[in-house]
Image (cartoon, rainbow, N blue to C red):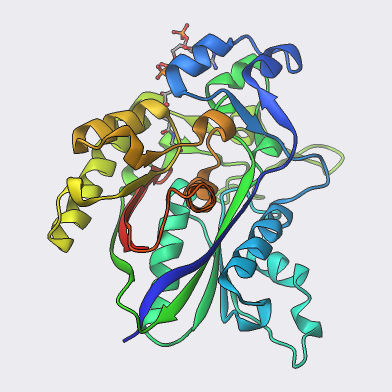
Length: 343
Ligand code: UT7
């Protein structure tokens, strides 16, 4: 069985920076830089311009990841696309990303299969387990795995929505998961879910149990009430569960590998709240230089946080071959996961 390792990383964030002060000045939200920084660690996020979609962000990150892997799209055997803000309700963003690479015009054409993963903040970890399993089983040599989000289109940017809208930003991260005979790569992973809390962090938009699936006005236009249109979050419950499951998952993968937290060279946490990650770091007893963050600059980019961090850490020289890397995330579902890689 081959090992599965990350052969290339890439990331893209849209150029428009929206600071906490911009939320007040440009959107009229009753909040403050002080409140947001103190509770979350977020100083700014990026918002994509109208006309830019999730597959567009993913494409930029993917081009970089392929380049760094020394591959072209023709080498890719599968696309796995993790997002909670897909371009359309259906089809998934994976096929839209595939289309942007013009694979039908390759010689010979390569109709790369594309799979969307709907696991929110844990989407990248669910995608990594899927991609690596495909590679280890011999079904694929190279899988392009992307986490990308365009949150800005679906945030209630008013005071009513501030608890959620001040947290999220747009961005994309991509990796190539490749087969290797070398003794490196993904060593172990764990995934979990607790569907009892599905509605505690949830954006319904429509309800398929209704007939039809959304209200229709006299002119035949769909009407979505605000409570369905915007995401709802029970922040305290999410916080409590995030801390618990991230720590449990990290201990589990460490135990499986017969290592302790002190053997981890780099901890890459999902970026939902700096306070969550500082607590996890503290419980594991890891020093600051072994943990990377970008929540201050990008906010929560959901499925994209971990691959963006990996790409940034590699560029900054903080992630080097041979390092033992731990990944961990938690989010809506509730869903969570962790992994250990020898980079
Ligand atoms: O990746 C997905 C996973 N998501 C998470 O992991 C998020 C986890 N949860 C959290 O990070 C925190 O719960 C939040 C940062 C979202 C909120 O912090 P909190 O300390 O739990 O605040 P809260 O929701 O209990 O709200 C406290 C107060 C409320 O005012 P009242 O009702 O006490 O008058 C909110 O309206 O803070 C108010 N508030 C704000 N004030 C200024 C909420 N958001 C804001 C805001 N600016 N942006």
